[in-house]
Amino acid sequence: MNHAHTPSAVGVAAYDTTLRDGAQQQSVSFTVEDKLAVARLLDTFGVAYIEAGWPGAIPKDTELFARVRDELDLRTARLVAFGSTCRAGTAAAEDAQVRALIDSGAPAVTIVAKSDPVHVERALRTGCEENLRMVRETVEVLLAAGREVMVDLEHYFDGLRHDPGYGLRVALTAARAGASAVVACDTNGGTLPDRIGRCIGELRSVLDEDGRTGCVVGIHTHDDAGVAVAGALAAVEAGARQVQGCVNGFGERTGNANLLTLVADLELKTGWTALPGDDVERARRLTELSAVSRTIGEIANRVPSGRLPYVGTKAFAHKAGLHASAIKVDPDLYQHIDPAKVGNTMTMLVSEMAGRASVELKARELGIDTGGDADLLSRVTRTVKEREAAGYAYDAADGSFELLLRATRGDLPEYFRVESWRASIQAQPRAGETLLPADGGTITQAEATVRLWVGGRRHAVLGEGNGPVNALDQALCTALAESYPEIRRFELSDFKVRILDSERGTRSIVRVLVDITDGGRTWSTVGVGTDIIEASWEALTEGHTVGLLRAGVVPR
Image (cartoon, rainbow, N blue to C red; front, side):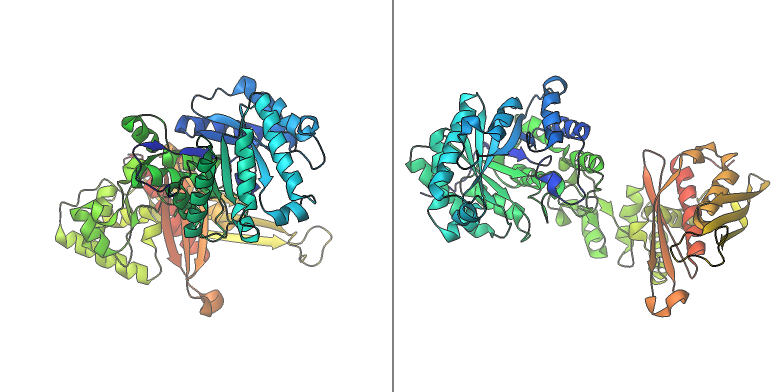
């Protein structure tokens, strides 16, 4: 029986496992408060299930489920507790892990069951029939406690290679016991989409032939072969009606299928639906996609990759001049969707590849009307190409490009004029030491002197810091703050150094990129020089100039 067909507003349940499987990725960790915040956000977005953790096995998750009763009011999603089947040789009703799942109070439970006979024998150290008993009894006990029960078929696709029939027997056992869903898991992440589709179609057919048409088939993929999303989509086409994944592709090893990508693909590229509500409501929810990605990235302290599909900051960034020329006529010519549908925006990247169209569109993005001035656009384009050849990178420094554009137009405000600057650093051994220790435990002192003119007044300021760049920044801000108190809100949020010609060693040209924020907006500037301090000073002064400009400050 072939279950692949053209859908008609058929729902696919989005099952989020960010808080469980996503937390298994290296350097990802959630506090209980973090988990509560993520769950609220996912519920507002509209996922169907939120797998919050493993009560009884992880103390933090046990605490979470104890708190959710009073602190979490879900409107859209069902909270899921994750656990395992009862142990071999133990009745499910007497198993501590099963009891912990019930005691969690979660309305839904997902249990992981071995579906690969090799794992049954080597990992569980039991027999295949006993494993079926463990699955059946655990589902029955949880159902008797009033829980919705879903069963993750661990190592499902690998298991079918070892025994083509055993995984199907495990799935049928779970369905016959009353499981609402059986989820085929590509636990090792190595199965290609075409095979996933064939195996899911077979599983769906076997369940239907057994009269288990109400039992949902789900899919859980990992990205070890780089096809997690593709595999999940193939499963949907073959009959799966639940897709599991993690926000931003968090998860064990290379990560799980990116649930945000899956939701967007299903809603925008197929006839399937993955969010609740009518067409208008689902479209509204979809515009929150990028915000969900960023917010959960912040909570996890993992900035999302700019290249994530749909939601990344570079997902709709265009650099080539050929692209820009076409986009100027019709943005759809080089974009697969309107970025606004997923809460994102198109950006133009100006670089040595830029033509006049790129410059004009980037200017428009920055709120500057060039009026189609061909001479201006040509001059800016030429300057960009020349400066990029010297090491500047305007595609990563929108602030510096804006200053270049305004300077060429002749409308760049002069907030201050630098007379001179100097920075120094002194290192000395600790008291009693005669040599600078190799462990870096030296006493260092950095200071900088900045002389500049603001509004007809000369300022000479000494700054101190934990390094020469920090000292320069302190001196610059102190000198400017009297006339421009707005500058006190500016904060250096990122600092990157790149050696551009490593063959020259310490004589190499370096590029410095800085990000500065005022707490709401962030902008980037670039400096280039043979000296890292010189390049940093250029990037810093431009960064503060951009901040004043974008704050609407007029020279004083």
